[in-house]
Amino acid sequence: MGAYCISEVMAEAGMIATLASSTGAFFGNSFLLISPLIGGIGGFLTGSNTGSNAMFIKLQIQTAEQVRLSSDLIAFTQNASSSHATMASPSRVMLGSALCGIQSQENQLLKIISLIVLGSLLLILLTTLVISLS
Image (cartoon, rainbow, N blue to C red; front, top):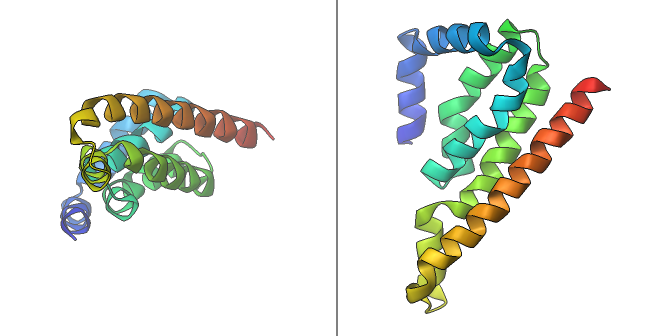
């Protein structure tokens, strides 16, 4: 709920439009390469695909429209990368290790799952590039 509220406040204050304009001007069509990272950061920070999308989907879509990228493709990228990155959220790793009774291995689990998430973000990026070129 908090991420949605923050997103709405940012939209009403014009902050998302300003960020989208700056991001679009700086990255141009290369924004396609940055989009999975934005989604991944949201998923990692919130531990929730819904929370990440509430925070970043407006920014992603507005930036995509500004640089004339497919907003559907960018929304796919945001959603998929966010969903994958929630696995490495510290709160989820802590919960999983506690449920399995392996709290002492929490740091190792976080390192391993973070590598898996980075690999999945790379695959999402490659998939997005292939789709955008076809």
